[in-house]
Length: 164
Image 1 (cartoon, rainbow, N blue to C red):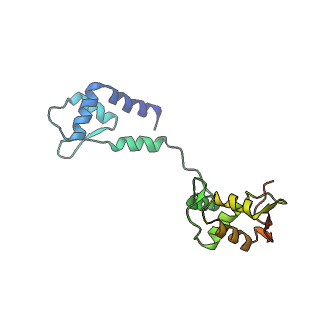
Image 2 (image 1 turned 180 degrees about the horizontal axis):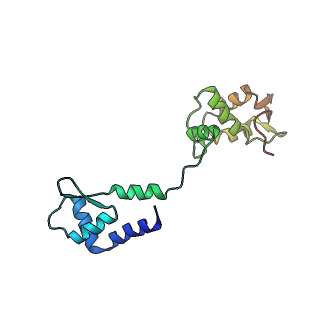
Image 3 (image 1 turned 30 degrees about the vertical axis):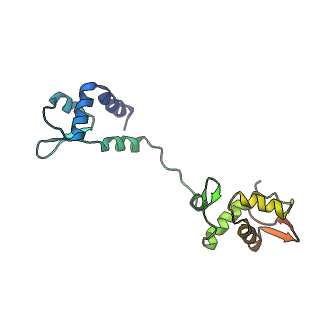
């Protein structure tokens, strides 16, 4: 698809006579339509004659143009797909998931804690509450999977990816 195709369709809809004919076709009123306007609409892919000789609108032409103009979808890694599935606006939709997916999510969450820094439990709770209201479950998962370690009421990061 070229810019010319897009301009042609927009130009057809800008012209009053072709816009009126297109609207009539969309509404099913096919009587007394200008043959010249119908031919112009057909050249832009917005109308076509049927087998019975009756003209019909082709509003799907807009979808075709949009698809041709759309950027190709970005390739996501398996980890990014999991994160997009379970995180909406930075918050977890659920804490119930298969272990392999939970590990991806926990590795992501563990990045909020700096390696070598000790955190009181209250600070850990505040950080985890930003992800899900069941912060205690998240804290337990992080400890159970070795991403956080605990001694008393003090936590520190002991696993997960490290940004270099």
